[in-house]
Length: 490
View 1 (spheres, rainbow, N blue to C red):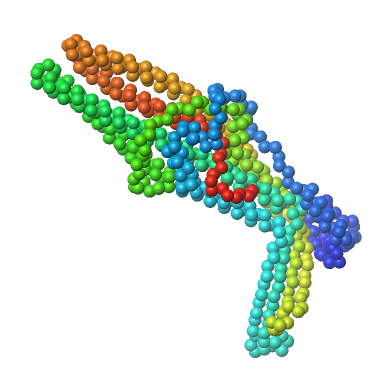
View 2 (view 1 turned 30 degrees about the vertical axis):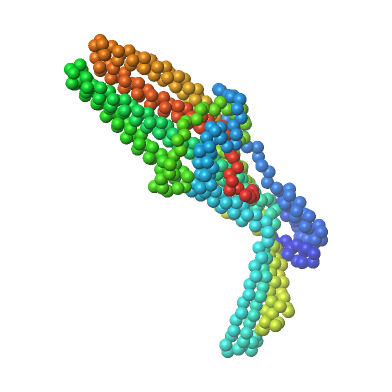
């Protein structure tokens, strides 16, 4: 079936492969004459009436109750400032601009923005200019020896059903998801640097403690050697004390190794070569800030960048599905070309030939290919919806876990401190009994070893408590605006 449309005196022949309700014609009608002022609004009306509409996207999970614990402090956008550690602030600020993995994630966001601009270009006509020059030898009689051609060609597809705009919206949502992915990566990097920094400080304190314990054990050995010459103690007591000394020295080697590895890790996180040595300031572990306000689960969903990323991926999949559905509808496009031809440059632009053509193409038989594409995009949309729901559940779990771990870690530190006090009292009593010959030195040695181990355990437990707080801040805090953002367009 063929339909000829006359727009403003220009005849356009349109081949219709599949009749559609908007293009039904009466029997015997071969041409429809519409004034330009009526035809153009009709096209715009069709375009607007088929604008893609977003569906309501909700996570497929049941409503969540309030979190187990909550505080009163509001988490600042840069959560690490809560520890009031100038060195930590400087390290994280430096890493956010120098870390290579984070910079790579930013470039991924820039690439997706370019895709959005590329998709927007399909709403505008494509215009091309061509030029050609040729020389024929021997010269033909009908044209002459030289031939010059110049032309312009333009093509434009009217987005009748919103297919192109659905694709643009999909890429916009994907760009927003990419930006939230960058924010999540920045949040993860800041948390990793905070944990690494506190581990470094703890290891330095443990090294200092181990050195003092080594000095104590060496003093005991010297005392034993002096008393051994007087026959006051047994040789086995000296050997046992030397075993404790070597065990403490072995612990020192372990701490020195871990400290060097953490320095390398911190250097790489800061975008620096690990072999470039730098001095760590003599800082102690900060005090634990007050418990932050956890808020409601719904507020958590609205501010966490990873949850917002998953949500926008669902929206992008929804728009891709809409684009696949609209690909089943007819497409209307126009082609305009202008060409001039002459035997010399002087006459090249004097005579022009114009051609205006309209094409309407509708799918007829594709073997179910278009329907399969719709099914594929629908399945991908459902997949992203379930992944979004899983991301929400994981966010709730991370907050709950961090709250429980922090509360229980505080209880554990209290138990360790009470144990240390009891062991110190026991150790003093055993030393008195040993000097009076009422007990074996093995009891004194075991008590001393336990006291030294508890001192190291308490330092590690306090550092773990700070790490749990970092995990809580990371689970509760929203995305902060990185400094490298100067302009973004979604």
